[in-house]
Amino acid sequence: MRLNSLELKRKVLHILFGIVGFFLILNNILTPQIIFIILVLGILLSLICIKVQVPLISFFLNNFERKSEKQLPARAVIFATAGSLLVLQLFPRDIALASILILIFADPISHLIGKTFGKIKSPLDNRKNVEGHIAGALISSILAMFFVSPILALSGAIASMLFESLIIEIQKIELDDNLIIPLAAGTIMYVLKIWIL
Image 1 (tube, rainbow, N blue to C red):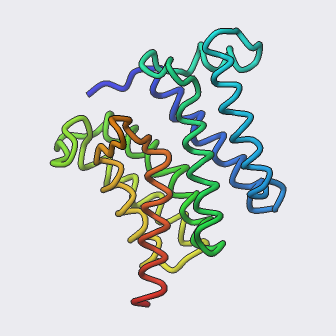
Image 2 (cartoon, rainbow, N blue to C red):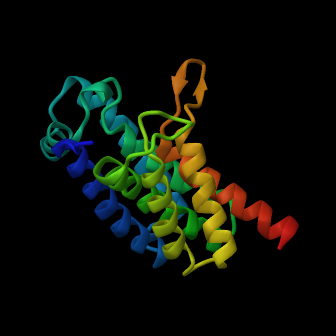
């Protein structure tokens, strides 16, 4: 399978912005309150960008946005911000940070490896490959181990890859995987930590 240049640029940008955001959260520069304000402003800017070209924002939208996401520009960023905010509010800090790392790395690695080396189609979503899911889960779980135990990290990463393959809709609106991944990872890690480990 071939990896197109737009998707490669999107995945690299996802990882780079994710790392910057993660270190700002880790060092308490981005607090949940600030992330909430960024989320609200991001949604407003997104809606404005439907009608108006906003200088720096429009550059990123024109060069990194999929054509199918023009109804809500910067949709992936909005959902990643919302997912990060939710895990920070719902879970203990160690699990929240591990979930955010899984968000940053699992999906892009899964996509890049799956498109480049994938041969076996995922039984949950035929657009994706098993090899990509395995790579995304392994790499993101290794990074999550800096904050949680190996069992929690691997469980959270595997859960995120399984849920990422599912198409979840509410009122015929498909939920973005940038929201699903951290919530699935955080929920599984939290449940395991509280009830089993």
